[in-house]
Each structure stands twice: as C-alpha cells, then as structure tokens.
Image 1 (tube, rainbow, N blue to C red):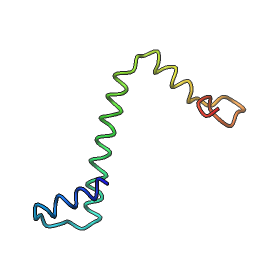
Image 2 (cartoon, helix red, strand yellow; image 1 turned 30 degrees about the horizontal axis):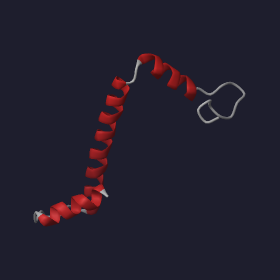
Image 3 (cartoon, rainbow, N blue to C red; image 1 turned 135 degrees about the vertical axis):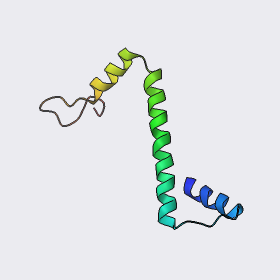
Image 4 (cartoon, rainbow, N blue to C red; image 1 turned 90 degrees about the vertical axis):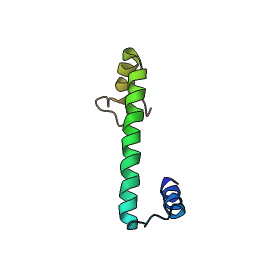
Length: 71
C-alpha cells in the first residue's frame, strides 16, 4: 500500500519515476526506519519488570520444542 501511494504521489507531482526496484528499496528503508522508531518507543514505554517477564517467555526451556509464549 505504501508503495502504491508513493507511485500515485510521484505521478501526481509529475516526478520522473525511478526504476521500480529503486522505489521498492526506498519504501523498504523508510518502513524499516519507522519500525525501529516504533520498537524503541514501545521499549521505553514498557516497565523494566514487564520487559524481563516478556523476555523470559521467549526463552526455550531445555528438552522442549516450544517456548512458554508459544505454549
């Protein structure tokens, strides 16, 4: 959806469209940067004790095939 909106905006503003693969990389880069900002904001907003509990859920216990979270 982000890619399609970028193409529409570029066409509407009569911008010469780059090669599609270049535009795809640009969108992927912006998306990745925004995800990192979101993750950082969520990390900061989460209390330390809860962070520890959540990380513990991801640990794989010995002789088990799934984590506590998956279980």
